[in-house]
Image 1 (cartoon, rainbow, N blue to C red):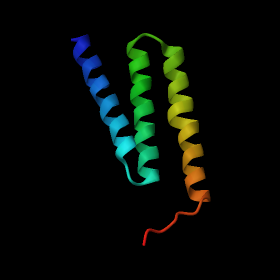
Image 2: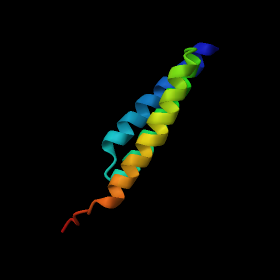
Image 3: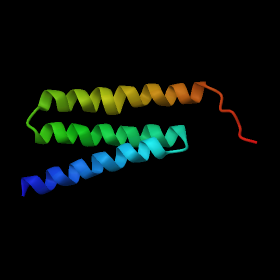
Length: 81
């Protein structure tokens, strides 16, 4: 049964990675990337590496997401004509 959960997590990782690449809006890509980081933290926990899981959740899904969102809002978007 454990392999099913791992397979689902891997499928979700692939889906979120492809979705982040294909996203046309930067904010949507950042949110999807944050979801990717949280799924990766779950995967690290499943692999019995709680130190990596905590680091991935704190840095990948937390701090990096905040920095990306701040950067997006501090830059100007060029309107398409």
